[in-house]
Image (cartoon, rainbow, N blue to C red; front, side, top):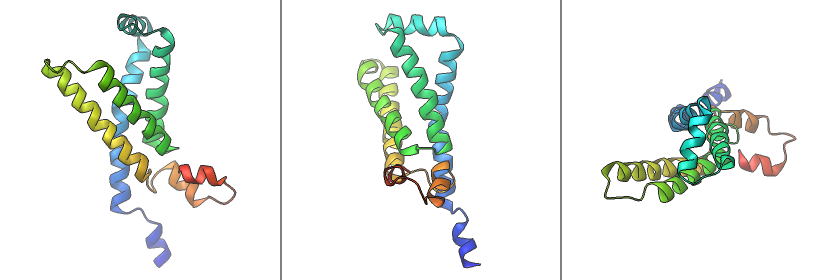
Amino acid sequence: MMENAKSRPGLADLILLLGRLLLSLIFLHEGSSLITDIPATLATFEKLGLPALVTFTVIALQIAAGLSVAGGLLCRLGATALGLFCLATALLFHTNFASQNELLHFEKDLAIAGGMFVLAVRGAGSISVDGLLKRQAKGLHPWLIGML
């Protein structure tokens, strides 16, 4: 009976799940919005001087890493990628601090990056694919176990 109580998710795991879902939502929404109108997305990125390869890479990153964080599958890796993406976005596109809107986007990107880096250090928690894999860790490569 004591082992059953230990196997139940605790409050921290529920909060990690909620945090992962909230953090991933913006990337899943943005990635799906970008992919629904490819011609407009390509035109927007082209105006910024970015080639089509970057456009498709950003869409793939937002969707793949967003799903990684939401589901908790290689969550540390997905969170690190999105944290770095947010830092790059803030530093490359939101540095016109004379504009209150740009400053807000800069700060938002920094805050999301911070949350992602905390998640990258902490991991997904037990309510995740990573948590399930950890419980079934026998036979997994030690490198992969370290990523969970």
